[in-house]
Length: 566
Image 1 (cartoon, one colour):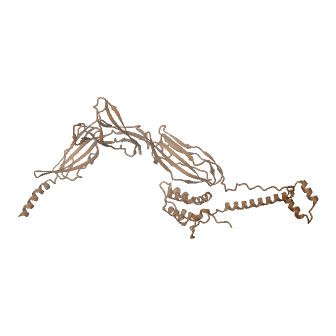
Image 2: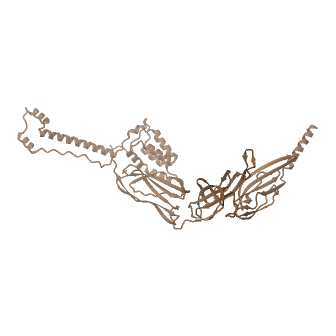
Image 3: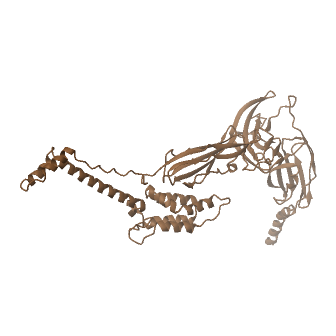
C-alpha cells in the first residue's frame, strides 16, 4: 500500500510538468513603433511551454532589417502546484530603409504569433529637430573613385551622456577591402546647442569591383548611464542599452581605363628610390643595389615587381623582396623593396639602364612613371688580374772610356800580384772595374727574382689553391648544406650558402658562384614565379658535390676547385 501511495504522489507531481511540455501559445512584441531609420528595435518572441531553444528562425527578417545577435532564455515557475514554462528570444533589428514593413508571424511547434507592422521614419535633422542623445554619422572623402583606389570612410559616434561599454562594427561593402586607419579620436562638439562626446574612427576602403554600390553603415551597441539617476541597484548605477546604425553611403567605382596595358596602380603619389652599397666596383666583388617603390592609397599586394636590366658583364643574385605598410594623415603608405647583388666579371665602363614603373595618377587621370635615371659605372680590375707591372730590368753599366783605356793599356797583372790586386779592386772606392762587377751581379739577382715572381703569378692565375682554413671544413658542414637544399626553402638555402662560402677567399667565392650560377638562377626564377614552381634541387646538390667532394679521410678536406696543372 505504501508503494502505491508513493507512486501516486509522484505522478501527481510529474503530471503538471508533462502537461506543460507542449507549446500552448506564441507572442511577438517590439519595444518602439515608429522608429527612426538609424535606431534599433528589439523584437521579443515568447513561447509558452517547453520549446526547443533553436526553434526561432530570424532569417525571414533579413530582407527588410539588419538582424543583430539573438539571445535566448528559459524560465520555469511553480505556484500552488501549477507549473509555467516560457522560452524567450530577443533580437535587435535595424531598418534598412524608410517606410512601412511587416514583421511576419513566427510559428513554433505548431503555434504562431501575430504579424507586426513597423513604421520607419527618416532621421530628424536640422535646428528644429529635437536634440538626440545618441546617434552615428558617416561620410567619405570622395564618392567617385577608380577600381582599387582608396577612399577614406569616417564614422563619428555622438554621445550625450557617459558610456559604460560599447562596440562599433566596421562598415560593410561587398567586394571591397576594409581596414581601420590609426587609433580612435575623442573630443567634444557642440551640435544645435547640445554638447556631445564624439568618438571618431576612420577606415580605408578599397573597392575590388567597378559599378555603383552602397556602403552599409556601422552598427554601435552599448550601454549608457540611465537618464533617471535615482534608480540604483546596490552600489551600481542602472544602465540603458542603446543601439544605433550609421547612415548608408552610395559610391560609384570607375573601371580601369581601356588604354591601360600595364600593372594597374592607382594612386596620387608614387616614387622610386635606389641605394647602392658602395660607389666602387671591382671585378669579382659583389655590390648590392636596393630599389624601393613607395605608393600612397594602395595596399602591398598592388605594388608591381620592379623590372631591372643589367649588362651581361654582371652576375645577378636577387634577394627575396619585402614590403611594409604605414599610415599617415589617414592614408595608407606602402613600400616594396627589392635587392640584388651585382658581381662584375670584367673591368671597364658600363651603363645601367633606367628603371621605369608606370602608374595611374588618380588626380589627373593620366599615366605617369616613377623613374630612376641611367647610371654609368666604372669597374676596376681585380688585384690578382694580369695588370700588375713587371719589375724593370736594371740597365748594364757601361764603363767610362778612361777606365776602358787604362784596362787595355795595363793588360793582365802578373801571377805574384794577382791576389792582392783582386782584393784591392773589390774594396777600393777608386776601382770602377769592381763596382761594375757588383752591378752585373745585382742585375742577375733582379732578373732571377722577377722570373720567379712571374712564374708564381702565372700558377696563381691558373690554379685555385686550397684555402688555409680547409682543415676546418668537415663532412658535417657540407652535409648540413645539402640537407638544407633538400628541404627546398629558398631563404634558408641562400643563408646556408652564404654561411658555407664565408670560409673561402673572395676570389674563391666568386669561382663558386660562377660554378653554381645556372642552378641558382633556376631556383630564384622558380621561387619568384607566380604561382611558385618546383625546381631541380638535385642539380644544385650535384653542383655542390662537384665543387666540394665529401672526403672519407679523417679531416674531410675540400678538393681544389680546379685540378692542378702538372
